[in-house]
Length: 414
Image: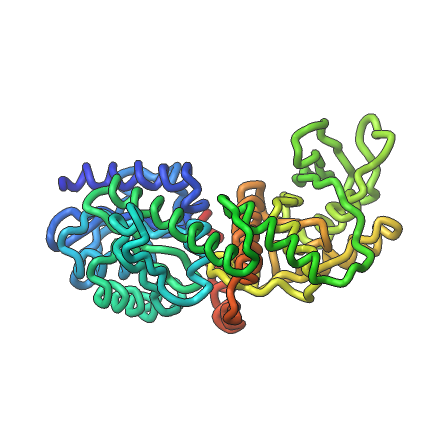
């Protein structure tokens, strides 16, 4: 493929990955083979919607060398191995797609065999699980290389606690592989649900709804926190603006220093107003808050555990080494706000008992990214109920290293 054509194809594929939800922000990467000795790949830490052909880096397969001032993705090694092991491969995408990410935590290969239908035709009889390694490290690359070598018919690899690698002769085929993998992983979860409960569900949402129902039936009934109306907000000078997450209603402008409402005050202030105010006052680097009540986050927030552990690399990086739980007492909002703001220390989200999570960032896009990875991590905890083996989180040291690198280096590229 001509160099300029390869670069343009990679840019188009990156945009498609974001649009289809297979990746979020700059997570994941895309590459295309140029010739027998090189490929082009997306750069490190640059948003896909702002890429130009000059940003797409040409890398040599043999030694990973490249020219110019743009740094290629830190995952260039696993792309190089895909091209080296498979001469027929012309395109590689590394995704953090939801269902595959969930299966990457559960342990074991995804076996399709003869019953896999068209999934097996695209993916191969087995989608191997590569052993865990920190992102961008030689250990991760070795695990993927071994998985490819041991399964020469596989067109996808699950990377433990990380995501998936999908290969194809061209971009279109690689996308079909990614789509087939997502469907096959969901089918595996549906089979586990049937085995565990005898019930059927056709979607991941349906699977997790039944898991949550089963949890509720097996959990002693206790008093739960009252349901809160979720609001999003953003900082504006010495005030902040709140609006219901539903989109219905006008923005409410509130002074940070005393909590007074600017302009015409509503008949009733939002119950979570003091929560948002306390967070902004405690951390000047936070400029946006998203109160996520997505089904999986809300379900996980009712689990009554001390912390939500990290099961996925992108969660550890973007959200934190774990998330603390906080109970917001509507009868004592100032104290509840203080405790929730304190629980955010060193993290980018806090779980509110039975009320989802507050996700924060330097801007709205970053807060939404925190929501995305938190939702995936919560989805893992729900799917884990379907497996008899104990699902292990990422080790604290590995999670801490990833979080530190993200906060001090990677996040500053956004």
